[in-house]
Length: 235
Image (cartoon, rainbow, N blue to C red; front, side):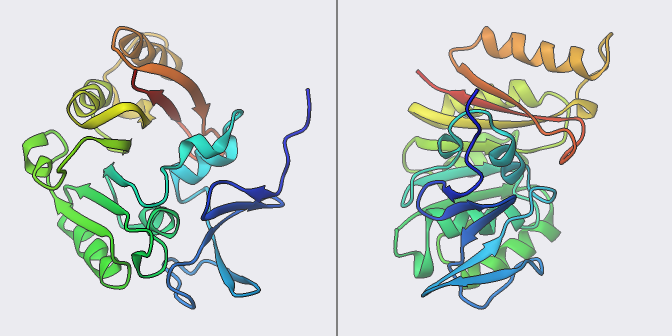
C-alpha cells in the first residue's frame, strides 16, 4: 500500500505539514485557543489541534481523501453542537476566509448559553459565523436561518439518540449529494450488550436502513477516545 503524503493542501484553506494540521488564518495575528502561528509569505497559518477538535482528528485519521470532509469555500454549512468555537474558527478560515471574502456562512447551533457567548465573540471578528441558541432536537428553531438545504452538516452532540437525530436533521436539511459528519460518542448512547463496539454497530445498522451512504467510519481513538466519526453522503 502506498504511503499517504504527510504534507500538502487539503482544500483551499487547510493543509498538512509534517504531522501537523493547519488552517489559513482569516484574522491575521489573532489566536483563538493559544494555537501556534506560522507565516508562509503573505499567508498566515494557525495550528489545528486534532486533540481539541473532532473534525481535525477525523481529517488526520481518515484513510481516504480528507478533502471530502471539508465543505466548499463560500458554501452555507450547518454545525450542530458548535461548542466554544475551536473547530468553528478553523472551519471559518476555510469556508469564509478573511473578511468573509468567500461569502460563506456557518450556522452554529448549541444549547449552552456560555458557548453561544463565546461564539458571538468569535463572530465579531469572523463574519460569516451565525451562532444560534437552540436544542438540536428542535429543528424548527434553526430552520429559519437556512433558506435552502445545505451541502455539509456536522453533528457533535453528546446525548442519547444521536443517530436518530442525525437522520432527522439530514432528511430536513441536507442537499442532494451532500456530506454529513456524525461524531458519535459511545458513552452517550443507550446501554447495549458488547460495549462500545456494539453501540457503533447498532449505529451503523440504523444508518444502513436510511437513505444515506456510509462512506467511511473513522476511528478517533488516541485523539478522542470512545469516538467514531461517520462520513455520510446523501443520494
